[in-house]
Image (tube, rainbow, N blue to C red; front, side):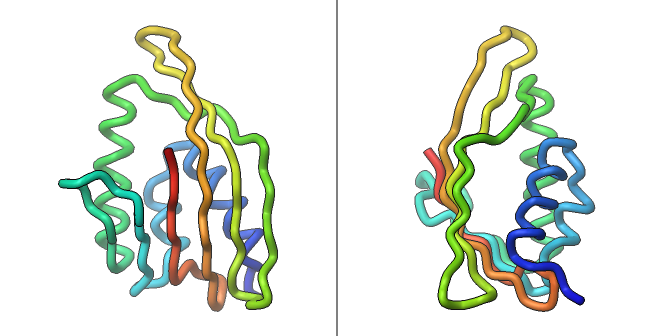
Length: 128
């Protein structure tokens, strides 16, 4: 039996905390899409396909590690079920630390996740 969108979200975020790029990318369907509707000008607003997602995550994970950023935990988690069983809307805060300075940071997110046959086919990622 395929995993639910909530189960996939929980797995995804454990992988993010552990910098597990390959397994994170494997959660996406081969033709999965990851969108950043609020992306800053000059940055990618849409990733299409598992390989493009893997490459982007790998690059951003390396940049985060090089800068000393470490995601520590998530809180204020609210998961909204929708009328569509493939879709959930998730609100949460990500807390992290910059190892070089000890500076703490927090980012607030809203993600819209569509999972089909146990794979992410669409992820819309809104964050501050």
